[in-house]
Length: 328
Ligand SMILES: NC(=O)C1=CN([C@@H]2O[C@H](COP(=O)(O)OP(=O)(O)OC[C@H]3O[C@@H](n4cnc5c(N)ncnc54)[C@H](O)[C@@H]3O)[C@@H](O)[C@H]2O)C=CC1
Ligand SMILES: O=C([O-])CC(=O)C(=O)O
Image (cartoon, rainbow, N blue to C red; front, top):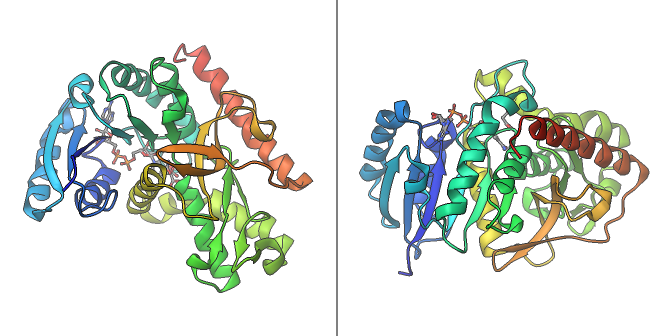
């Protein structure tokens, strides 16, 4: 067994937490030989429910689970963490856009960014799942000046996985035959899932599908509207799939992307693909040794350009709104 990894999860008593904790504890992130120490942050009224979740973790007797600590003090819970998964935030209800949560949730990420800045381990990586994820990551990053911006990422892996699922169904192939899927931009209705650079069994996916009408009016709205469709059907926002994507994103970030493939991660823009610098924008990235790199040189057709610009414009508006609120 190697040295334990300290992983913080916020909102641990929530819906996503209830799927996420058990997968992390069972070794889904780092494998069977790496013990994990869970550090779980909640608001005070949710601590009792969280104690119940911890009882269940005990009852699973996971060999990889080294220890669990819970609390409502971010400085204590984040102390020395190597990975922080910031899930805790209010979910949207039917009829809301994720951006409507900015004022309700933004303040959470100022305080948590500041706490991480004070006490996290030097090698910390921070993944933001709580919505609106991209701009919450921007807020946390802006409030943690001593942590490199490259250590923050917002979750668009769920959109990426949704896009894989939809394309596999359309092309009647296995998900594992698809490579190089990209989701550009915001984790919102303006996101742009792009199959023009994706491949199915080595062939260009858009050519294999050969159905522009489906791309524009089937695929893109289905992927971008999936969160709302799930709220409509379940009466609550996606949880198990969000937890699974949170695991996939953290695992691939820390352990590396497979040769010849990439993943979608929302990261601080360096201006690549004409996106305003500093926005937390979802890009195709490869990772190695815990660092990510934006895939460069992809073809951007005029349709893609319009979509990529529209989602960047929304993120610029969100950035202006949180600047106005004094959160960055
Ligand atoms: N990026 C993505 O792909 C997805 C993001 N989400 C977002 O994830 C967030 C969590 O979703 P659920 O687990 O379903 O919500 P939930 O309401 O079931 O759980 C949220 C938990 O966060 C806790 N919390 C609130 N403020 C906190 C704080 N300051 N510190 C620590 N914990 C705090 C609450 O007490 C609650 O237990 C929501 O914002 C949701 O919209 C959900 C699905 C996908
Ligand atoms: O749609 C929501 O509010 C929850 C979410 O982010 C998703 O399922 O993608």
